[in-house]
Image (cartoon, rainbow, N blue to C red; front, side):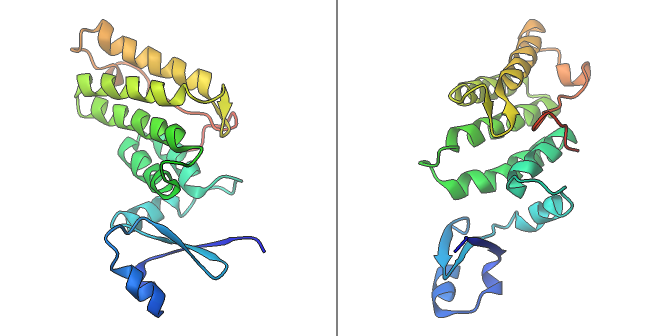
Length: 184
């Protein structure tokens, strides 16, 4: 039987098992219940659900696709939050753990640029590069060679300006292509 996913808030489930798990300190975990995988939502979940509500149909997890939609709308903080839920749900042993972490760090670098914090942005660009470099040139429908080029260009622009010129104020905002398309 194929797994079906239900994304629910703890208050929406009524059973002794779910009631006992509803008070678990970590609300972002998964557990199997019959043939459903239940993913408890965090306090950020209503905002994330709103961001994911109108996504185009695709073969990707809505959190993954939502990352690209938010990123390409320059909603970098929201892109981070959307993908973070998928990253945390997979755990540290998931095959995409470092991949998702690198994408989250990339969005975080742009959050720092939006706030004028250039040194932390460069630090996150470096961390993103380290994590994304662990994967093949094309991974998850994403041309990582292009993403790493983007990382280098933006990091180099900040460093060339000696941490006093914010390239986000002088260059067009970055866009990420998923399967060759810029989702917005």
